[in-house]
Image (cartoon, rainbow, N blue to C red):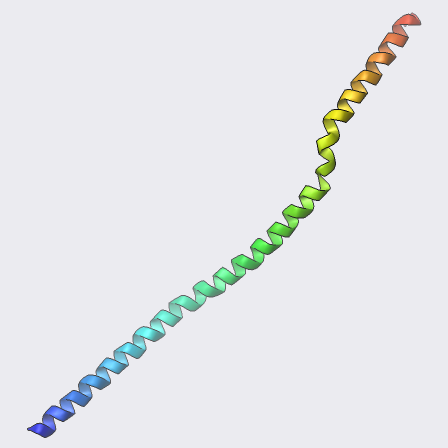
Amino acid sequence: MNMFLASDSTVSWTIGYTIAIVVVLVVVALVVPILLLARSIGNEARQISGSLTESVQNTAALAELNTTIEAADVITAGLRRGRQRLGG
């Protein structure tokens, strides 16, 4: 009978190890695609950040647009006054 108990114990350990290996493989199979997707998202985020930085640099001059509009208003008002004085 002791021989049967030892055999049952070995079978139990084998089943336990097999289940543990299957669980680990399933976890790895689920985690690897998530890590690959996270890496892809990180690369995209780097490209988007670079593009946004470039956009900020390209549109920085628009901050002075109000100053340009004010100067144009002053110039056109002066031209109107000059035209009125000339009778036009």
